[in-house]
Image 1 (cartoon, one colour):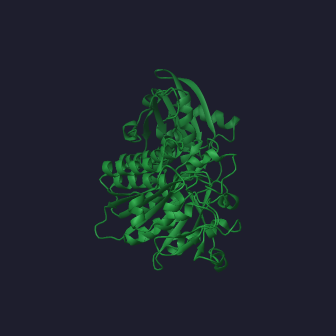
Image 2 (cartoon, helix red, strand yellow):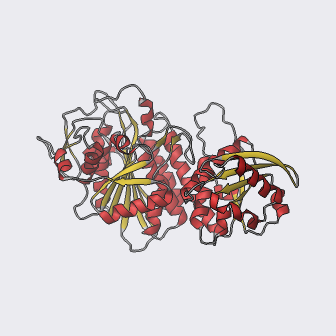
Image 3 (cartoon, one colour):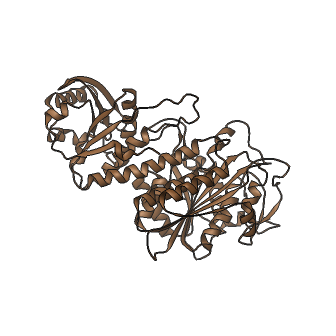
Length: 497
C-alpha cells in the first residue's frame, strides 16, 4: 500500500508572494464567496488579476468541478496554474471541495506534475478541519487508478502536495485523511479484481494479513468450521463452486470495556446467480458483489491505524455463487445457524443468505449493535439511483447516526420504511422464511430478511449499496469502477462510538 502521508505537507499561511510564484504547479481552490480573500494568502498580483479576468469571461469559474488550467511566467519560469471551482452559488460544502479535488488530481496527472502548491482561501479559517480533510481525501481518491490487470505495469510518478492552511492541527488532520483514503483505495483494489484473481480464500487471506499488520485479532472459519456451527445458509450459497466459502472475523479492541459494534459485509466474490442464472449481459460486473466485505476490511484497517478508542468487530461472509451439479436448487429448504429455516425461492438472492449466518454470529460474539453492508439488490438503483444507498433497520437512533456520519463523508443514505406488509411478504408456506419476496419493495424485503437473524433486542441496520458501490464513469473523487462507498461512513461511526 502506498504511504500517502509522505506525499503531503502543510504550511501556515505565511508564504510570501515570491514563494507562491516559485511553485512548479499552483493549484487554487475557489468558491465564489472566497475569491475576495485571495490577496489575504499573499497571492502574487499577476494571479489575482488572472482570476479577475477569467471570472469576467466565465461566470462558472467557481462552480463545483469546473477546472481552468493555464500557464504563466512565475519566479522560476513557466508555472502551471490549475483553478478548481467548488461553489459557484450557494454550494460550498466539504463534499464539493472533495469532488473538486478529485477532478484536480487527474488534471495534475495529465500535466505530469511532481510538486503542487495547494491554496484554498476557505482554509484560512482555523475552525474548518472538515474542509481540509475533504481536500486531502479528494486529491487521493480522485487520483486512484487500478492497473493490476494490465500486461505492462506503468509506474506513475507520485505527486507531492503542499497545502497552505491555518486549520488547527492541520498535520494531524491530513495524516488521518491519508490513512482513511489509503484504506478506501485498498477496498477499491479488492473489489476491482476479477473473480479468478479474488476467491473467498483470497479474501480470508487479505483479512488475515490486515489483522497481522494492524494488530487485530482474527478468526478464519473454513467450511468445516462453519458446518460445526450450523452455518448452512453460507454453505448452501457456496456449495456449487470449486472455491469453498470462508468467513473472516476481525476484532479491534481500542475501547477498553466498551461494548462492541459489528460491521458485517457481504463477500460474494463472483455472483453468477447460481441455478437461477443471471442474463449474460453485464454479468462480468458481478465480480464486485464482494464490495460489502471489502468495505468492512478497509474500514477495520483504518480504525486500527487511527487507533480509535472503540471496540469493533468486522465480519466478512465470503462465498462464490456458481451453478453446478452440487449447487443449491430453487425450492431447497436450508436451516440457518439461528435455527430458522429458509425456502430458497431464488439462488440469485444469495447475499442475504450469507449475511443471515454472519449477523447471527455477530450477535453470538457479543455485538451490542450490528450494521451490515451489501450490494444486495438492483431494486435500490431503481428506487434511489447511483448516489444514495438505502437503509433498513430496527433502531431509529442508529439509523440517524449512520445517515449523519455518511453525510460528513459525502456518502448519502435514505431510510426506507419497514412496513408490516413487507415482513409478511418474506414468510414462507413451507419454511420459516423465503429468501425472495419478488420485485415489489425488494430492497426493503431483502433487508428485513437479514433482520430476522438479529437478536430481538439488538439495534441493527442494513445498508444496501447496490447502486453506489460502482461508478459507471469517472467523476469527482470517484474514478470508474469500485467506489468503496461505506468505508468512510464506518470510520466516522467508529469515531463517534
